[in-house]
Image (cartoon, rainbow, N blue to C red):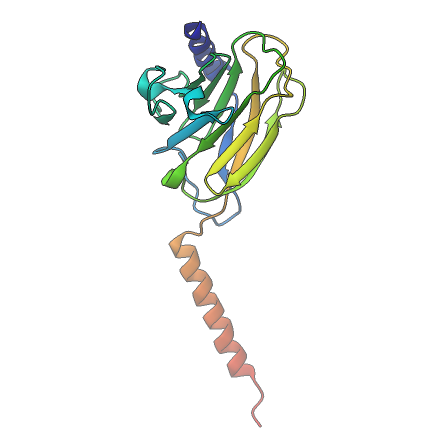
Length: 200
């Protein structure tokens, strides 16, 4: 069953470029072209690490299978839920495609992703960008500065292999040159203010 899901992930990623966009916010910030380039992700499904199967383990249910490094050369998913209902495909540019593998009935469907120390900056925001053909509202949560959670229980997928687009925003990281320029400018303003100060 999961072979069809992997093919659908590859097709959706190539054709539609769907989903989770990770970007640096704010002007004058250091822009990472590939914010997930070295990402190692620990995932859980419905609060259970064993509920997520990672690409690094061949999607086999074994200890540690919920941890997977980003594979920028593989168009397939990094994670499959152990029930094979959902696939999560990360790209080095920060995109995540979340696909359903057929009809999903009422129930609990939540996932969390912990990037540990592999992010360029702390997570500052997490929001829906495009719900695509889905309806209903996912619940998006920033757990801490390197972990997100998404509850898909209220999402109606309205068909097979549909996707949902969300976006993570990272805190801006000033470039070293920008920081030095700012300090030099402030020092210059201080010197100018002292020079203009009236003498008594």
